[in-house]
Image (cartoon, rainbow, N blue to C red):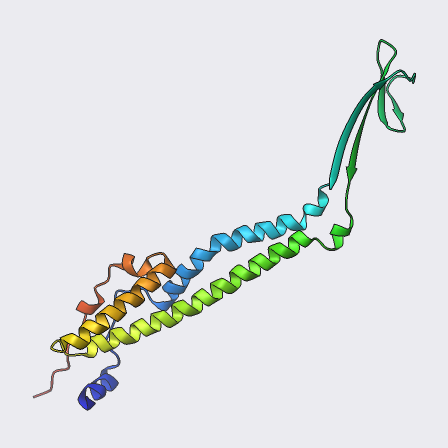
Length: 194
């Protein structure tokens, strides 16, 4: 075992090539959250402008016998004298809740949702980092083993596959799509000088 450790110290860890690096993994994780966060940004913006809409909007139309001059404003809206001597009036009312200018509960809820999604993205990033390096350590161990150690290699192979599947679930299949045969790229052993 000591010669293997000494060889690893001199050569560095066996090369695992052809697979996405940690930056690509994190970019893929973030990509899964970009749409959600973008939608929530729009929701926060829309909630911030929600106070501009009236909380109540009403329209009233009335016809009565009251005589008024033609096309005259009255206390209850706009009036128009019809040919039969009746008056047609209509009124539009809009009511705003000005307290929402200072505080809008919808905007606060939208910001809470955005913070929740951001926190979930951060936890997912941390999990992806942990899985990536745990998998990389197992790959290095696998490559350092002799091909004759089939039982240990088989156990490592399953663990590496499980971690790869979990990373695929977090990244939308990035590991699987890479199609890398990392196990076939074992570095050549150093040849002694004669």
